[in-house]
Amino acid sequence: MELWETMLRSISAFVLMMFLARLLGKPTIAQMTYHDFVAVITLGSITANLAFNNTISIRILLTSMLTFTGIAYLLMVLAMKNQKLRSWFSGKPTVLIQEGKIMEGNMRKLKVTLDTLNQELRGKNFFNIQDVQYAVLELNGSISVLPKPDCMPVIKKDLHLKSQSEQAFPIELIMDGDIIEANLQQNNLTTEWLQSQIKKKGLSLKEINYAVISTDGNVYFDEYKDQIESPIDKE
Image (cartoon, rainbow, N blue to C red):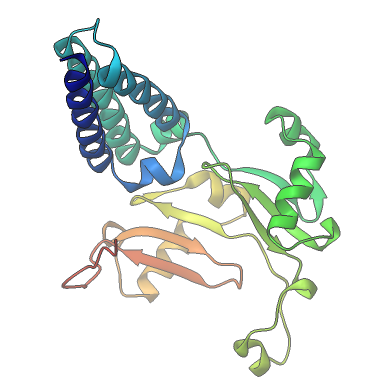
């Protein structure tokens, strides 16, 4: 009877964990931010006890699992609604290399060594650190790299350009419909200038979900209304 009970509990734990994973969504699995990491570790421990610990009642384990799932789901919803809470719960991307210079203070703060940085850069096919313009440690622990202009691979569009302008780091202007005033001030941009760019596109601020100045200096706008009739989620 104990073997059958263990098998039944294990199957139930697996099915329940799959359901909870689907409920929390793909970003929780892919990104693993601070609160995601805590939630996954805790839920994994509770699920293991549900599978083989016969001394703890299933009712208590289920209550504990559903409570932690509710907390994780609530934090995820709050993070989506509020940028400040999202920054506190999930953290912020951190610049490790800026304009070709290593940010030693940021690396010490994040406990990142030069060996680790070089290893991550080699994983991005950058064996010479002097070829890197920007390197950013993302929320999920990966490092994004922007090479210096003369180290960028040639693409078809480059063959039609007479001169290549200096590359710059993307500047986020609007996120979740809110203007990022700090970024405007740091880059000597005004709200009036942003409003004029919005008008050139024939849009209004309330229609914009995300806006960014890309590395080529152009302003990109993403509207709330995607005008896609049947979005496809490839699984």
